[in-house]
Image (cartoon, rainbow, N blue to C red; front, side, top):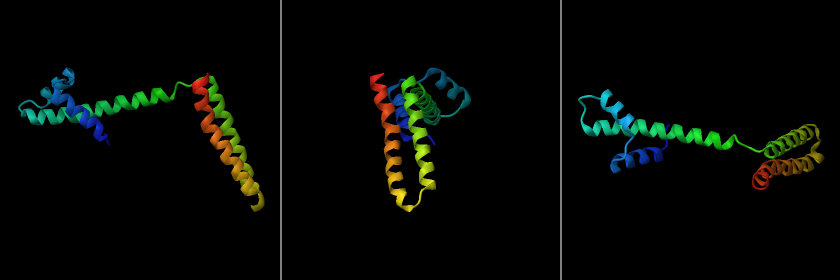
Length: 121
C-alpha cells in the first residue's frame, strides 16, 4: 500500500500546478471524456505510486554501498553472534546467563561497529 505522504506530495503537485507532463498526458489519454476532477484523482493515484517506487529505489541504493570495513564488522559481529548462540544452545542453565550476556554484547557490537566505521573509514 502506498503511504499517505506520497498521496499528499502528489496532491501538492496538482494544487501547485507542477505536474509530470508525461504522466498527465497518459492520464488524459486513458481517461478521455472524463471531467478534470476525475483525471486529477487518477493522476494523484499514479503519481503517488511513482513517488513510492522512487523512494524504495533510493532506500535500496542507500543501504547497499558500504565500505569494506563496514562489511568486515558485519561479518565479525554475525559470526560472533552465531558462535554465542551455539554456546547458549549447548549450555546448561548456569552457563546460560553468561552466554546470553555475551550474546547481547556481540549483537550490540555487530550493530555499533558498522556505524562507527561509516564515520571513520
